[in-house]
Amino acid sequence: MNKFHICFGPSSYGTLRSVFHKQNLLQTESIIRIDDDFSVGPLHRLETANGMNERIEWIHSFFKQVEGVSPEDMSTLKAYLLRNLTLPSQIPDGTNVILWHGQNASDAIGMSYAVSMLQDKNLSFETIDVTAFSVDSDYKLKDLDGNEESYVLKSVAALPPRLVMDAYQVKKDMAAPLVQNLILEWEKWSHSDESMLRVFKQGEVLAVSEDFYDASLLEHASKKFQKAARVIGTVMGESDQCIGDTYLIHRVHELIKKRLLEYRGELMPLHRLEIRLK
Image (cartoon, rainbow, N blue to C red; front, side, top):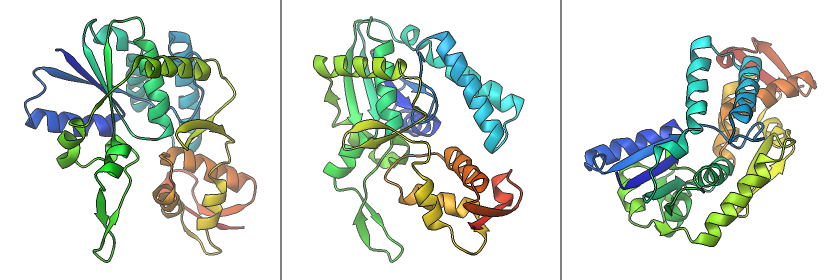
């Protein structure tokens, strides 16, 4: 193997692996996935076993509060997260690393994490920014009326398989100053133990308050009971951020505790929860 592709999350990995398999690229090129949502939760010293185990404990506690998690699922998640620590051993010196990412908080921090983990190895780096690719290629989707309109891809998971090889063709070298900036960026996040939520704004990742999405959740709720999943899905679809439903479920629960939302049904699982404005 002389090329190693790094992507973030199972959906991105599945898309790349499927396309690379069809293109017969997997004999000479390897795909490594880093599993985590770096936009949520503690990042303190995540490059170390202690830091990773602290994050795993936080994730376990967080999941139990909002949607429940089986011991089997938690064991699988723990294995994936601990595997992130083995990244340097998976890539030999003298090879080429290609980072696939979108312009979102998790990928941006994930890139800094990956490059920092690999900084002591003799590697060349390239990047494939699918957000920039979608803008430059004027990617379009059809609306409900069948009309095409420009659409900006925020993540590799959203990249249609038919466009993967086109995106691959426009990969860019990562200059040494950018590599160094990413290493310094990770140092910043690794030594920060206060921020629990991060967003991507104007080309940079910003730490924001945990209630960042509350206004949007309240805006899309109404005086009539409706499925909480519908409100959360609408917020996810209309947000300019990549945010998972688990965090938004957590915020719905917090808004219920604050008596800004009223609910009926059950708090867990999500499909049994209905909400309305108090």
